[in-house]
Length: 105
Image (tube, rainbow, N blue to C red; front, top):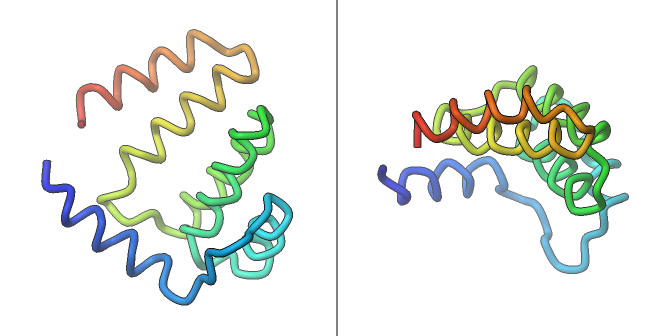
């Protein structure tokens, strides 16, 4: 796969975000205020995953998908969904998602 294309899409989606010193709460506030920006919902989902909160991560991943995930970020989003399913003890669903990710990456 062409990771340069992925980097370019992520850079466009993240344009204007001041990255220094951001907290989980900051991502949640921004994602809530800008539902049209899927990258902010993905960041909120990542923060929730990092905190071990699969249910919250699932919520933000749903919001990101509704906002329109760019094609180059869809596999990464599916991977995050699998991680969230694992965190909320839904291993069979997680395994199915991991299979999808492995077949598309």
